[in-house]
Length: 263
Length: 210
Image 1: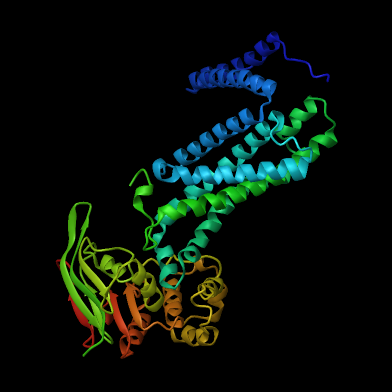
Image 2: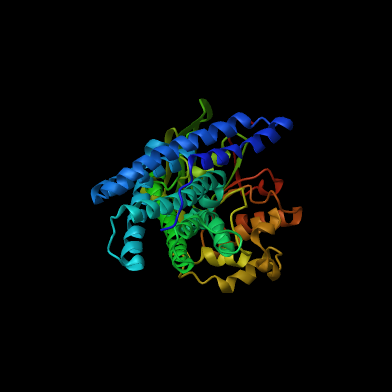
């Protein structure tokens, strides 16, 4: 494998690039210098730790350890998705975790068994990056969709009430809100998919190309992954909304106000 | 004995620490036409929403056909009575898709509505081409009339109407008020500031201070 390491001096030159944005910010008095430097330092520390940790994980390649790490990733992902929506974490955390667990586990099993077909389901080099990509992507979509679903419902409650008064079941009256939420979650990925390969090469493909794999191998992985991510996002959004809705409504079918942090 | 439809018994509502409605009592029987009158913020809409269980009194009781409105009866009432809100921004797609959507609800699938639709469009001076326009692009008055038409197509006979003539021109206000007030067996509780509703056959009930 002819992938050269980036030497320390190379990393130095990479960091040297930051001098350009910092200089421009300084000259134009754009107060983002401190934030820029701080963010990249933080990123470097985080990635450094991840590097050490992943080295250990990959060396052991213990199925139990891999799955355990996946669980940590899911827990953090669900926490982030509830926190960012400014919804009540105590109430909505468990159903969101459940949505991520169900989606990630099902997609990973499907991806490893039916798509890659090599049987190495719990291998670190598949489980961690693929799981991470699935989570990372469905995380964004789920945040957008769930928060839009509940904020829309609160803002335009009369429309929901009208549906109920025209004889709708709760799910029937909620369907328009679900449609809007799912659409907003999927629109960005659809836009990405449309220009993929022409405008930009996605991270997974870039990585495999640098690692010396043939472009054809790289694109088959990319195609399979995009399909899986798109489906996973749809499923995750659907399950998250269904599960959270069980505890977000009272028996009269009305939205409980205490699921929001701010009244 | 008269058939009781809705009864408010000593209902009080507290909102953010302020009592909006205090000891409100009212019995509405079959065929009654009741107009709730009061300044805005007096809690009229809240009272109307209670009738279908969208809000609940902090004190007192609301009952429907002599049953206290609880979680079970609320779902039943929503299938039997019609509530039209003052907010008419209630649909998406074309007006026709919106109407078809309502009649695709599992509870409404057996209701034959297409035949009567044209009759009501004519009655309320709506052109058939209105149905093919985007619902959200319709005027407030057109949206209100579509909501009214849906309630009528559902063949409901008990109506809770919240300012449904506010966005209509004066002639249409009369047509709509006439239509609801003239059906003897219909039970109507309406909120309106429009004079057309204040008729002899209607009981005017003050809510809060006037």
